[in-house]
Length: 87
Image 1 (spheres, rainbow, N blue to C red):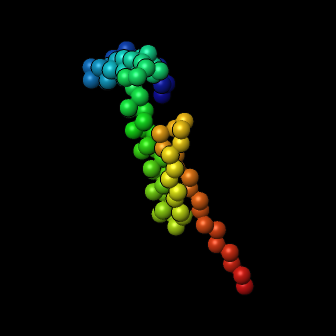
Image 2: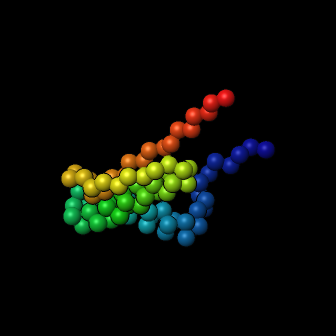
Image 3: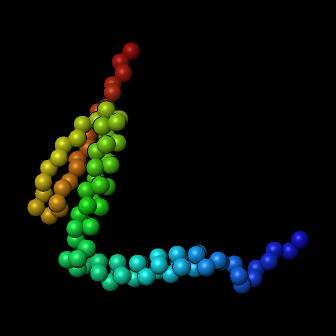
């Protein structure tokens, strides 16, 4: 059997709407990226990203130190404990 490479009627109406919506959102986000409108969303995103690092560190028995920086809203420094085996 030969594969059918035609793309006619490949997508249904819902899939086309979804692709258009994603494309429009991407263009809007890129247009507004360096504006004050997106700053709160970017800060929340950075916080959740760094908090996930802290949670992973705690789950692996590490220690977490929080500090506030002048340049970034919040920074997480994770220090993993190293186990030494003597035998």
